[in-house]
Length: 374
Length: 210
Image 1 (cartoon, rainbow over the protein chains, first blue to last red):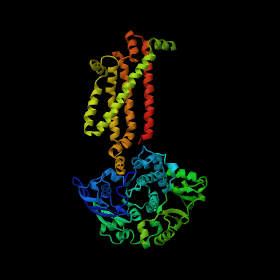
Image 2 (tube, one colour):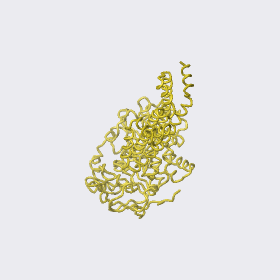
Image 3 (cartoon, one colour):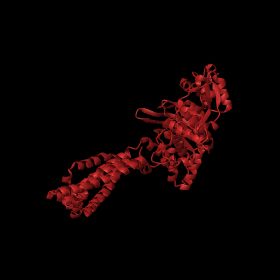
Image 4 (tube, each protein chain N blue to C red):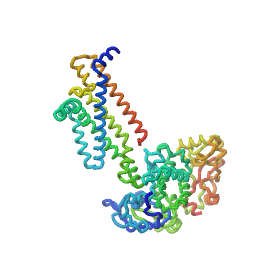
């Protein structure tokens, strides 16, 4: 294996960086210090310079002015190919090579770095295991044979394959439907601890930023507006733009008056599964419907939820799903939102099913700002 | 009817004519694919040269086949050499144009992620662009195949041998039996080769298609 440019990130210092294309500024006087080991989320509307910032760090873009230092080394002097092999990169949607299998996709850089096939295979098994994907089921498949959620996981697996100390992620969950996105975020939060990497994460979803980020940087019009920990941004927004984006005023002023039905998501029929289905059938159906979570109904009574990830790892896939589902919190649509959120927070789960007069009406996936406020 | 076929087959030595025909065809195809690929890659690496080169190749394509054969006579004599050279000149364009288009039309996002992952431009060319261009290149080769088949047959006019020769005999002697048997056989051969190429193209599309 080639030697590393850096084993660990101590700091990334972006100083006075400007990049323009003619009259258009892609980034203007950016000053940002990223600490080693943190996940910093860059948030802002499109065109605010988030992605440009990412691409400056791995030299896909060279700045007109200013310097970027990683561990006090000016990256201007580093070979871009070598630098990028020390940095994992994940993007939204088509990031996988359609002509390569999952194994080839994940292993591409390790192969170029001269790993033996055995070592590649071992590491791929290890990573897929981390994501709860059985390796033998997946490594020979092509990307088009995978669902959106699975493709995104493989993209992430590829980024961490050679264990780079720095990870750049450009809206990695942006193309997924809301419930699946929530699931991948949960999953990512769990493995983030094990990864122990410095991560720069671009998103336009403030909830995602608050959920995943240790610190959040708000950007607008190619400039950095405010950077800080989530609480800091919610409690002390520097201007109206920030307070609008974190929603500290408009959404939560009247939180005491909100009911569960005001903050839940309505149920779509594609999420409903009959309790008499076998695990195998449910897996197939989830693939068809491109979802990774389902709500189990016995006649019209909701029982609980099933997760794709758990079904696929089952020993006995011919069991009925009513024997294996996950229990969740049930809430009434007319419950007070604050107490409902507290119940959820205390039970340490991230989903609740909402009923009204015994009928299933919605699902509650509380967003992070709300959880922080109660 | 079978009698006629057997008679023509034997009197016109169609077996050895077919071998000759396929020999010219293979040599011409080998070189046109090789040269076509090389030109395609070269103009990809020097984008400014792409338009002029493709225009020149386009221009050669407009020379009538018969005229091209005649132009080549003073340089290559008569027989197989000018026939093979003419086939190559005609077939380079579809191969190099499709190679060039295939290499340049790979999805920009995939190229970007390749760079971001730390692939060098060379590695991107061989590991990403080239494999993804294969279906299109195969399409170009298939067009070349049809051109080559036609010109090799025309080679009969300038004593190149192959299946064009007995066809020429049939025309000169006004022997419809020879014309029909040889014509059909040449046609069947072309269809079989094209089918083979189509199967390859299709499997490449399945494997590398986007």
